[in-house]
Image (cartoon, rainbow, N blue to C red; front, top):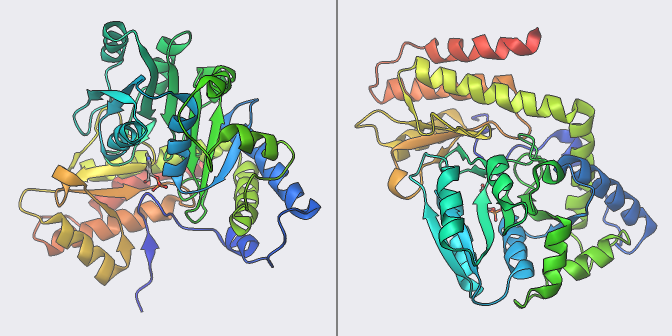
Length: 380
Ligand SMILES: Cc1ncc(COP(=O)(O)O)c(C=O)c1O
């Protein structure tokens, strides 16, 4: 037997309380019992998204919520500005193209955050741009984009549509206070649930835009969904068991306190970065790192795919690989959701051992010690 440690940025580990809630006997969804749980969860989601507006729960993975954003806001042929600095920026491009929009791509080097001045310049060059599509945390490159600053540019301009799939529940992304127009997330990251729920919240002006938008929509018609969800039900059959789990997970997060949840993520991320540096390794995103996952460049000559296989098969540790050009060159260590100090210790301990096995000169414990120095803060 090899004990398993799931340390990839989604799906993430699931707490026992949440597992137990999801194992409850199935109930009919058009019942007061379901409605009570559903409305309580929706109230908690409003606090998580820091909005007075509705947060809608969809039965889909996160991409479904991204698609819902595009389909409900725009009309065929409209231009949107897409910040494309990784796999998920690319996804915005593909969704926009699939729906007949004209995405203007602001390409960003992988590992870098978008430059806000360049966003501003693009808005000047293309005044017809109707929306900006961006990731708060670009999971593929472990970068945090400056959403708050971008929001300063869009107050009276195009709609700001933010993929918060590895940001919501990891760091504050307050929709109302920052002036974000659309914020989406998914269940299998900070919300400590299996994949299968998407979440989306809209600002007042984005809701107004859903009436004018001409793109086709049916399953993801947010107007229909909002009408139903305001009556504590859903337009279609909800993912009942996942909603039970959601209710339990949000209760756990609120019991810990959202500020502490954010501080825990920040601490785990800083500890992981400090460990990598102590081991003489380079970070993929040294300047604007995401607190959800840390991308670490592997030393020349080490085959990342083989390293990850060894970690998984011999140590039971699952990290995420690099994608596209970064395949085999990096590892991504997640610290998102139901994770704590000792997940970081396991991650770094395993990484040190794997690197040693692959011939990189590691002083065992050096990275772990650097991480522990930071993790000690939780004991103050
Ligand atoms: C930033 C980001 N956007 C979008 C997605 C896609 O979400 P899903 O796989 O739930 O459809 C992910 C998943 O990892 C993500 O991290």
